[in-house]
Amino acid sequence: MSETTRETKISLDDYDPFDPAVIADPFPYYRLLQQEAPVHKAEKYGFFVLSRYDDVVAAAQDWEHFSTTWGPGPQRIESPVASILQSDPPQHTRLRSIIARAFTPRAVTACEPLIDAYAHECIDRILEQGKVDLIDEYAIPIPVIVIAELLGVPREDHALFRKWSDDIVGAIGGKVDPRNSQREFDAYFSDIVKARQKEPRNDVISKLLRSNSKGEKLDTPEVISFCLSLLVAGNETTTGLIGNLFFELARRPEAWNRLREDPSLVASAVEESLRFDAPNQGLFRHTVKDVELHGVKIPEGQKVLLLFGAAGRDPDHFERPDEFDIGRAANRHIAFGSGIHHCLGASLGRLEANTALRIATERIAEIRLLDESPPYVPVFFIRCPEHYRVEVTAS
Image (tube, rainbow, N blue to C red):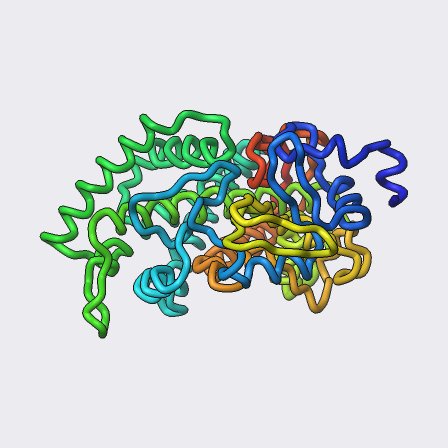
């Protein structure tokens, strides 16, 4: 047992990924799982948990044994509509080949001026106030405007857009009844799809409605399903990335000063935040057939939680895994997943975080954390403080 786990006197019986106390600090449990139970059965819920880097990567890449078709949460939910987040080949291959057209390097690069301009707009407000909630003023607004812009949602609807996102993510964690938001979301985007069918624009929805070289395109329910996936994956997790990144930097004035002195470290700081505090801590698969791993049999039809956040702290793959090092080299984290479900929007999320950090370090001389122990979003797979305040000084 590690020194951390001895000090906190935890046991595997205490591990509950839905417990707010575990959500606030899961890392001692991750180390204990890796050391004592790399294949752990959460008896209270009946699902299995994988925590070691090699096992998480292997399962994420093995769709023939670990399927996504029952959904990313702990419950078995089979979708009547084809979804990129909830399908295996060959259906997933078809969906991904069509959707990938909206996330080409050229399409992502085209978002940079918008991100740059809006980050400056946010920093203007932050510097004017001096003391702000960084989640509300920076980590939330940037991903919202980017995803909304990609989907053609006007700015006046951004607050509604965010509410739908929060409710649907909360539902995956079993915390919220999403039915009203789901109905509102479906109706809203049904209207947008109809409008784009009549008058296409240069947005993601219009691209998805156009046939590719094979004559394939998404039908209306598939487009709406993808919009929902993008809302969750592109909005909530990027908020988590920016929120976690700035939280750790605000706790470490020396790291902030180092970034200001050496802007070439911005990209590695973003990657270190992804490893150290993955905004997506883990998602579920289910076993298609019996699997035996580390002497433990996982029967067919069992839910299995793949802990991406634990993999990023695996001491067999990362030196000083519990140290936040903005200059860390060879940082092969799996915060964006692995295999066929590796996040399509990874390059966009990185661009948003890199731009947000670059502009902030150019314009903010000092950032001081005012809330050392903020509450965390109460959803098992989202890693992000709900709110925290900082005090900033302009350069």
